[in-house]
Amino acid sequence: GPTNDAPRYLEIGFDKAVRNEGESAFGAWELGGERILTAPLLENLDSLPFADRDLVDIRSYTFKVRDRDGKPLASTHIMSTRGCPFSCGHCCGREQEYYRRYRAFSPERIVAELEFIREKWGYTAIQDYADEVNVDRKWLLHYSSLLEGRGFVLRSFCVAKLFTEEVAKAMAGAGWTEVCFGVESGSAEVLKRAAINKTTPEASLKAVKLAQKHGIRAKAFLMGGLPGETRETVEETRRWLLDARPDDFDMSIFTP
Image 1 (tube, one colour):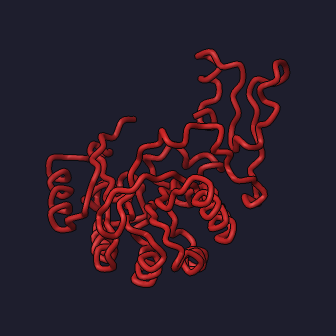
Image 2 (spheres, rainbow, N blue to C red):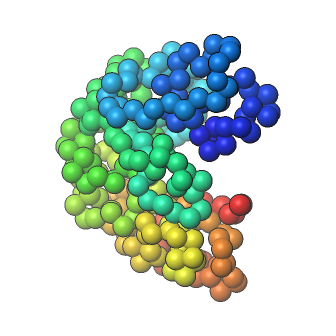
């Protein structure tokens, strides 16, 4: 996006490009002045109003989140945190403070928005697009405690190394029915070459099994073709899948 390559957006016809937070860019549409703006990072995400979902056709979002019995439910989405503190070599955001610096809405603020969504649109199924919802253990446990008994069905992305028994139990009790892990590769050597330090094949395997133990579906995101990939390392990834048996997985092709 513009945060990574703002000049490119001017080349293809945009009048202006704004780096970092979109909410800080009000007024950028005015003609004249600087064509590339860098918005300051928001330190207090709770200062933002709820997203104005009336501006979009919310019913056109067709992603389904399965409940505990496997029934697909119509969902909408939130983003509970911003930024990822890990610096994986394949990620375009590792050089950018906006993507790299972890910040979170308060659990109270998120729950208030979830209740507002349910009251206004009737959604109880939620896809959270935070990079990893379990970066801050204390924050997640508090968030989970506030969700207990509210009847929400949640799907989130998690980092395998930080997915513990305590976290899995809390998330299961709070309404999470699916978690997704960036496994990336079943080869420890490929992960090392790509500077992917957020997991290991063993940590990812353990995380999948922990989620399933607590009745949470586990999905694995994998990539083929990372630097150093060979027929043998691809076979390691295949064996990892057969050992882990995640409930679902995506295999993407690494494209520089």
